[in-house]
Length: 34
Image 1 (spheres, rainbow, N blue to C red):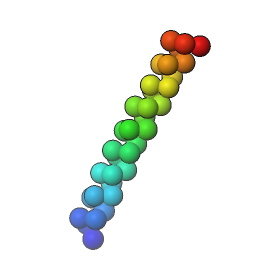
Image 2: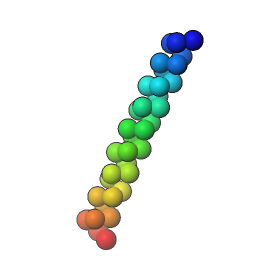
Image 3: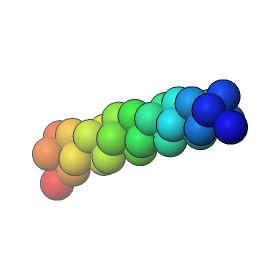
C-alpha cells in the first residue's frame, strides 16, 4: 500500500543520508591524515 511505500522511501532516504555523511567523513579524514 501507499503507507508502506512512503515508509520504505523514508528509510531509503535516511540510509542514503547516513551513507553520504559517512562517505564525506571518510574523505575528510583522508585529507586531514593522508
